[in-house]
Image 1 (cartoon, rainbow, N blue to C red):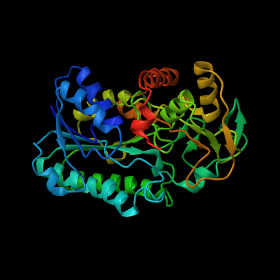
Image 2 (cartoon, rainbow, N blue to C red; image 1 turned 30 degrees about the vertical axis):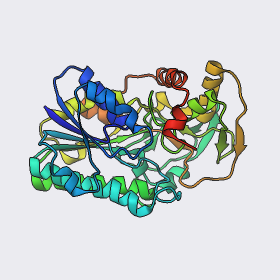
Image 3 (tube, rainbow, N blue to C red; image 1 turned 180 degrees about the vertical axis):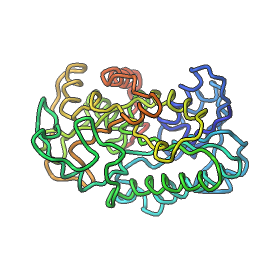
Image 4 (cartoon, rainbow, N blue to C red; image 1 turned 120 degrees about the vertical axis):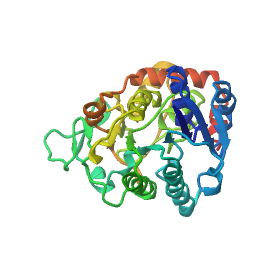
Length: 357
């Protein structure tokens, strides 16, 4: 099968390309990237060695897609993945919309032309901010947990946030572009007759992730701890109790393989959460304890001042993905963290390359 991966030289795109090649299923892989992310150039040589045909193109430019060969499936792993994008002064709101939504439209037009299937790697950030920010939590084992004695909004429980949780605004500009992309993808697929699948991912992490606090918090924290760069618990109680789940993107490869060959599915079953879930979840405080055991102690500053769009507890429930696809995450969090740590030790300049100050 011929498969096009967008954002192929980013962390997620390159990891998926490697996983698909290593699975030995014989896919012909094509990759597209605009190389604007610091660090993305570092993946180019290896992907070419693996036989991936690379195209330097910008999804925002429809004409850049005109010379791409036809494929059977597109995996859209290209996005500005920061919840602060468009509001942090480092990129404009228009750029965010043009990239994350306009780029999706151009890809959907490509899929329409070639009758290619479309898989969107979406995000937990499509879920509504106010009810998530208002979740009743308690501190146990140095981490926030949902309170056992309070009622919680529809679509959330101890196992995490389900697909039925509210997606009402506000969800951030970033979340809105991904939510709009989901809706457009389903409409294009229904209207023009090609398969569409939406995989809402939790926090993705692993070796080679570009270490930025707003995009790759696990890689950023481990690399910064090792390099003695300043670290700070920001917001909430200023003690690092906020929690995120953790998923290695290579664990998505078996799910993608099933989606490549799936028969017709009801629309409601084409959208699933893909995440490490409650078993994978770690607080910053727990991550610090892991780093201290691995590298030795160091101080972490505290600043309880709230930060825009931050949330106390975001864990996705992937039970629907198990029911529909028989999919569940395979890589334990400690294994992911150790993989990041080894990469950090082997690449002392990684933060300077991927997240320059």
